Image (cartoon, rainbow, N blue to C red; front, side):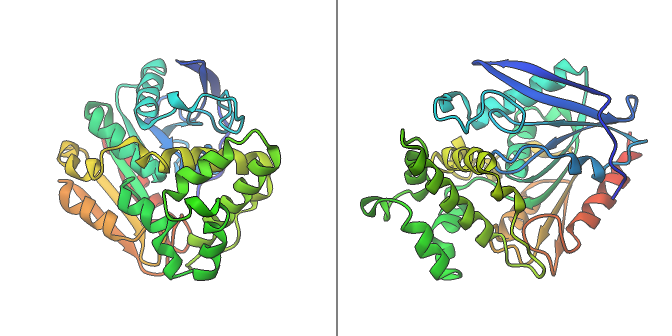
Length: 316
């Protein structure tokens, strides 16, 4: 990966509804514009994302999606209004940021939830996107959410039983993400803290199928746990604020946008059929399955992403 370049510009963009979105720009001020859509929802845009881009070729924009990272107010605060934090709001924020920075078109790099958000954004604003590179591809369907929150118990039965038992007995046969969201909105800080721990413990389990997986050290931070858990359960408990199958049904709107999809064969958290179906429906997309990789950028996925970004760097 490229050496870490420091931002040369940064700010807080007022996107309405009382929300300020933190953004930063690094690399070449005259380079090819690119925007990073982080995962989660709620994980924030860490500095490591900049290392995917040749700093001499790209003008790289990172931002923390509503309510997470350095954006305010934090969704980790139970008083924060989550009704104005939806996929529609995030898509509008991306376009507002593009206009604020004076970018005509930009490359979109997204992973996991960021891949879902990237599809939603590009389908809504195709003329704003030059290329897309998506890895650990997801689409926010009801089936994917059910798979992660319920069906994955067939692979990790003991761990899933602990995850299920974290919610009241009367809610264990329903929408587990929504049940956790209710716990995370409790007025009791101890209830909220336990729910965040239980949720993040399960997050670390279902992504850990590839060789060499290590627990995510960010989950040691109680503030990060709370932000991620509240954001994810809010989105998953509401089917990611998408009609079921919406992104695949509208993939034809991406025609004319070159796309690279990268997915790990061992990604049990987000099985590779989602990426495969998207590649079939998106004219101009290419899919690479990395045999020994799981969810995330390790075990060869990052290499394919780097190669794609280097290739697109010289594309007009």
